[in-house]
Length: 258
Image (cartoon, rainbow, N blue to C red; front, side):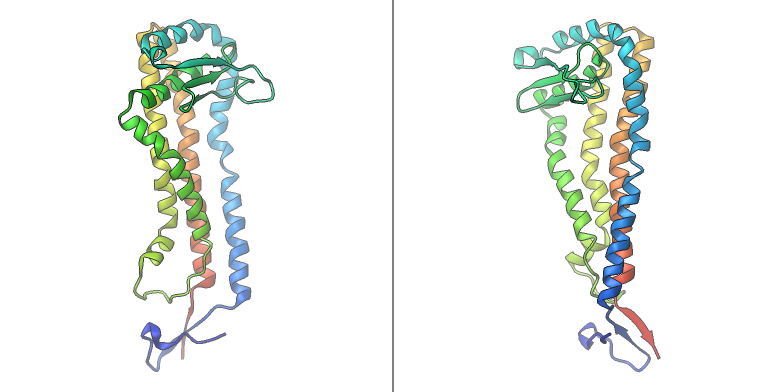
């Protein structure tokens, strides 16, 4: 162990600060990564309700399919280049009818049209956000950077805290201390844009003539989908927060009184 120098302004006869050992720092790293992994194991609890209903809705696909096609026609996006791509490859989630997506680069909605058109209205909402511009498109552009920032915060949270508690903080310390909050905030634009896509999808479904009981079912379905995105943001924020706090506990210099 070694004492912290007076660079930190510690100069009295009552206490000093002692650096943590390499063993303590390594133990902190192991505990932090383990805690993060355990927290991420909770993700299925957020996504399973959506996946279960998605599978059940395959039998009701005929109730949504024609209305979805009409909603696409009503949107006016086909004139702007929007394409519907039917995918039936059983090796993919989309082919199995467990997912669907809008691909901005190619202006494609990809889904299994024989199983999962209930998800198509949401993807049409994504297409509206992207191809009509505005805040929806701006939020979509933040998705990639947001996930990158969240991942970066996970790495930053694993860094050692070399300053004693209570010392003056700089920008690096501010980021370290708030890495969990930053990770969560970085993922919020995606959650908001997903919510916007669902709202627009439900609106277009109703305008295309979807019966009100089915509209209500659509709302419940999309709430479960949003839960999976919101859950991912929450779990990521908590995992980074736990990592940061554990590393702080095991790496910040100890106050020794005498």
